[in-house]
Image (cartoon, rainbow, N blue to C red; front, top):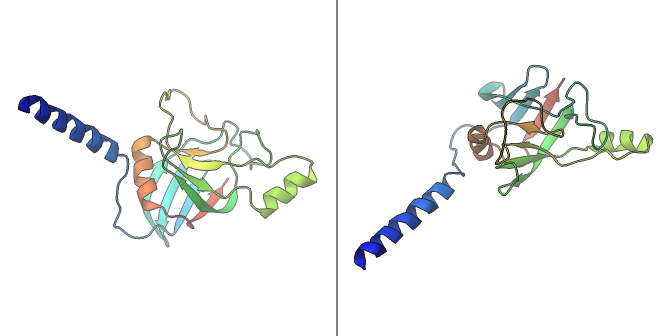
Length: 164
């Protein structure tokens, strides 16, 4: 009986340790800005003018232009902010970008359309096929391993600059 108890305690401890690994801590320089270059498919976490980390990214399925309307598959361009964090994302972990901003809403309204929303930097869904790029509906995607670092490093309120 004692042997079974030890095995169960070990199994539960091991299982909980596996769950905890999704969240990392970060004690380095503050990420003051995220810079995304859509054409290069690169994202940089910055501390003022210094690059802390860089990542290859996937974008929306129609990445060539600025997002204007809901469902257009484009990734926005412009100045935004991280406005939320989602530890329970369908895409592993995610941090939200405050798209649409006032200009995005005004333009969509002038065209009689919705600007859309829910733009995130996120990981990958559980059943992800890595054989295609630019697969999101307008978000910025990295690997789940990279997203663990980004989630630990980036705080709510961080500026996001997205360039063509």
